[in-house]
Length: 342
Image 1 (cartoon, rainbow, N blue to C red):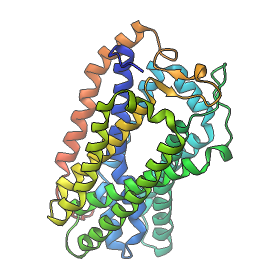
Image 2 (cartoon, rainbow, N blue to C red):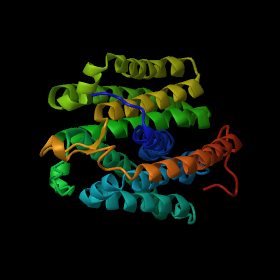
Image 3 (cartoon, one colour):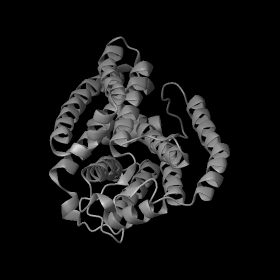
């Protein structure tokens, strides 16, 4: 396999960056949601909610932007994936909506039962979203039954295979680790001490899942390893990934929570890069025959369309980045509750 940096490759990388941005940004607030029920007091749960309150909806802009870019640049991939994974994607959409509702209405009433119900809804939806994302990635890694007509023929039970569930669990563990580190930056006092325990446990959980998933990939998914054998320089990504993960407990012990968060972000980014390199130049690998793979060439829009879109992206994406940076700058620091808080 040869890598050529043409406009199709540029769009492959650009979509990957957008989806990696979603994984990093929405990953930590999904992690916060997954950890939400570990706190018992109403005050602590409100602090967790308000740690992501100003940013959670903006984080999802990256997913919308990535999906829109995929639709315009590689419409065949979009059509095949969204029709074949229709039920998981609809369930994902439902969980995103249900999670948003739980954040907004949870503190509207004082009743314990009311708040307990929405706390559970928030946490379950967060974990379900992480698992659904991971299960989808796991199926894409393995390859899916795409036929000559570019239709994806797979049932829900076939999607829930052991490898896909393992990748789903690894995704959930990564987000829990990422979210606990974020909470360490946003909390103080006794709650922060509790959060530091979550960092240690979730990091161990992630490392175990990641090591297991890596071994399973090396043994059972040989096409994901081929690009690294052909281009040994990409092993640097794996090395950087390991260094980023190893640096998390180091920075946490030193009390450098921001640098631990950067390391966690780098770990997610490098994982996405490893995933992209293993797939390239494919978007969807057919388990029926390699000739049915959907690649950056046979599933792309016309070159003119890609060029026009690239010009638009050059103007649009900086606005998304600027918006994200400004929001995080405005709401930096520890969480302080007031009468406007959730």
